[in-house]
Length: 210
Length: 212
Image (cartoon, rainbow over all chains, first blue to last red; front, side):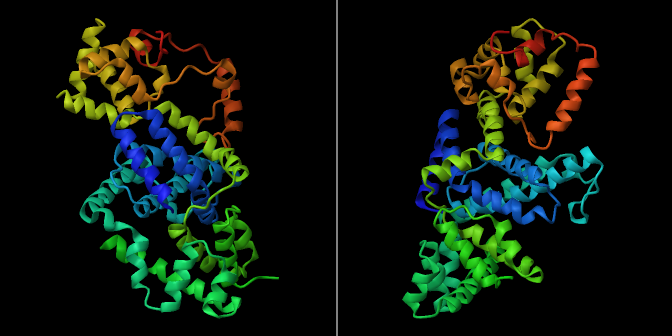
């Protein structure tokens, strides 16, 4: 997530607050140009859990994008991509679940156990999104601009080599170049990089709960 | 032959950073079956922090042609910013939804229709009403009640010139991909169903189109 994303996010909020739908839509398109594949990949990672067919994956992407727009239009107040990506992940979860339910209704197919049925969320899926958005904004307000996850998480990765690897990776440096820089084999670099990504991933619950 | 997860993760990351649009499915398929969940978790960890790649023009065109993207954009064009703008303007005007509905029904001489008008207004504020189907007469009345020019409401709705008939016919709707078959069934049922009740004045105001 580069500065460009953050700038688009800020512009979106400014256009929205000025009632400029076309401007807000242009910023949203820019954000989705840059982030469609992230959302698509998140859907694909959930596809087997929710037993989504290829066309249902497309539908889940579409629903996640529409809900993302609605949430951004209604309630989004922050300007950091860390929070944006995190809430996007929640929207992807809901979208996959919703598409699975809708597909089940159409075909009589059973939903998976973790999807649940008959709850208030199923009856009105938006309530949960609204509630999560509200909680998120409260956290945004509490933590302000310092809430960017990566900036918070990197110093907390204890292993020096892992920290360097994740920093260089986030800068877009290929594995071979990082391996050369650290004077390790590419095979070793793969292992360090995997551990580094895992270390960063483990920090999310702490950040969300902080 | 399966590839170690650390290598697959790194290959995915490098392809991602290069803007090569890697597909997670391809990488999961190459993993040892027992290690796929672990790889999926690492890929998700990466996706949550990954920088947005700098896509070239060809990649960008492919992204914009993705069915989910096309369908979402079509839906969003119908909603605009009303879910954000309308409640804010109503609050500023000090009106409850029911009171605003009362202003609208009074403006058009439709006593007794307040509850239905309120329902329509609620849908407008929720983004569940197609902005392009709302009449200009209604927007004028709403603008008067809310103290803003109707043109500002149009702008916030993101309403654009009406699509040509062909475009309108093929505009994507939610679940376009999966529901094509269901649509065909619905069309055949519709052909055998009596025509719906004609729109009354209130319907025309909210969903009858800009000239209604």
